Amino acid sequence: MKAPVHMALAGLATPALLLDSAVLERNCEAMAQRAAHHGVALRPHLKTSKSAEVARLATRGQAGGIAVSTVAEADYFAAHGFLDLTYAVGISASKIEALDRIQRTYGARITLLADRVEAVLSAAEEARALDASFRMLIEIDTGGGRGGLAPGDAELLSVARAVQQSEAFALAGVLTHAGHSYHVEGRDAIRAIAETERAGAVHAAGRLRAAGLRIDVVSVGATPTAVCAERLDGVTEMRPGVYTFFDLDQAARGICDIEDVALSVLATVIGHNPRSRRVLIDAGALALSKDESAAEFRDGLGFGLVCQVDGAAPMAGLRVAELHQEHGLIACDSDTDGAVEAMFAALPVGSRVRILPHHACMTAAPYDRYHVVRGAGSDVHAIWGKTRGWNVHTKDA
Image (cartoon, rainbow, N blue to C red):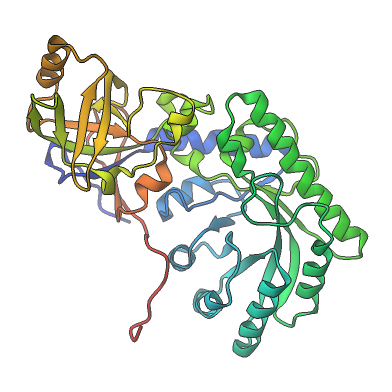
């Protein structure tokens, strides 16, 4: 068991990634209840947190399966005992050796994803050379326009047969991701996409079953649709991810409230610039990311909202207005002398602030740890590790 940690926020080197465990636990429990309500398994997508400690909370009371997006994530989570992994990115033959090594090293079961015959054949050739085997899902495009076959595409059966005829792969089912749900506002619009996502995946699975193929998995997944779906008939699992942390992008569309955002970046005020009427902090584009996704639905968010160090409630009228690589510039909505002087007074040089991010996945990705707090005003009570990067490098690589 890890030794308890007690560390004041004032003592942290900045920028630092803060995670409120009370909010995280509440978010995880709410999604678990949604899955139970719909009678489907919850396979959380851990690309957001990349953390075993978060995974343990997100899979509590579930079957234990998770989704990942990188080989590094697959290796990290398998090493931490998560052995049922869906690698939810279209497979490339170049990834097979590393994924096979993960399976053999940890006794993991990795399920792959493909949407083209050529991808299946090239990956199968590599797998056969290694005497490797994997389960395979066929990716279905239910409107996102990224990867996948349309539910009614004639090539669906060709891909399925290529999987079945290979010596390396066993067809498990179909998978879709309604990524376009991130670009509509209002729960009614998201509900409509959720139904299209569900119906498309179920239709594709039905076509494969009608052709005599066994389909055990019908997997859907996106946080907005998981929150808003009214029915998941015919679906076996859902794979939301960012719900563990939430962020401004989700809050801007009413998927969550600001109080549900568990992640923030702790930064130090390093200067005042009366000429530009800005407060300088030591968290820039690399610490916060330049994602402005929530601006699609709500004005005045800049590159993140500014909170006092002891709480997650945004300070009225303040935002991160500009980003340089290692500098963030805070501005106020009102450009009057009085408003700027009040901002300088509220954020003296040397003070600390928390920044709420637009997109938790992008903001968390570069960091190697979470400093875990519990509620407003609390100090750090734990440090949780995480992975980052894309690949696992052998000693001679």
